[in-house]
Length: 320
Image (cartoon, rainbow, N blue to C red; front, side, top):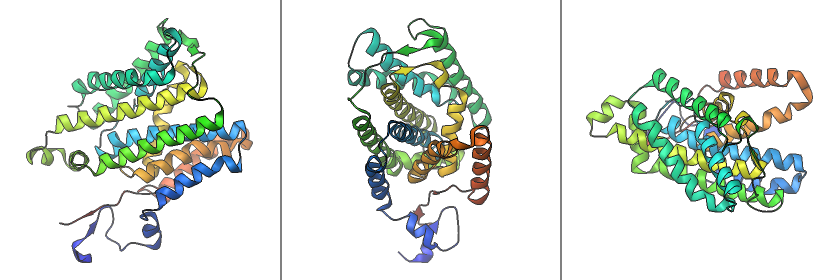
């Protein structure tokens, strides 16, 4: 294959040194190695809590990237599936006294059903209309959890058992689960279904004209994203041993979407970097007190102005 037959999506310029570095196949393993060695640098409870939260945010971003990055569906209520997973595992673990690991199959089933129930009637909508519907879905889940007795109302659920004993062991378990989830999302993106998602994202009418069943393809993306979000909710419930409606506001959805856009929509390593930046940067700025989120917003704006395509944009090679 000659170089002239290769078109790099997103740019016509030859690859720079930075681009070649970002496309290095060992970059993912290097990131995983950094995550595994991080507790040897700082293993305080605060640092472990931040790193575990960052890992959970990576899993959420990987799930939303399937919906937004691969398939081009603007979802503003993704945190709803995060809440469904966390509350399902929390309710089963506290009311039925099940081990948290035993609740995972139920979480997968419930999130798949939630994805179908919400996605089936709404995925014929496009762009702004779909965004408004998903935003409403996220608020419905939060308000429902806030008013039901079984979910603990505004106080939420407390006393959720841990998956493993000790914050270090749980951090490594979270890194292992999130690594598998990121790898699974990357494999999905390279599959036949992943190519169909990209066709729908680029031009839905053309994809349908070429024989792609766009409705089923979009529903598959929505359900896959829901499962990723639900499993992240299980990790979140185990991490904090408690869930409450205040953890699943629109701001949470916006931050996850921001991680996907900041990292690079459709780019698996990009959303990993974006989620880590979104999670770690406010903690780095914590000493600034009231100015922390102001500077956080300014830095995000600067990032998007300097790298509008994302910190680690998706680049694929196709032969025209």
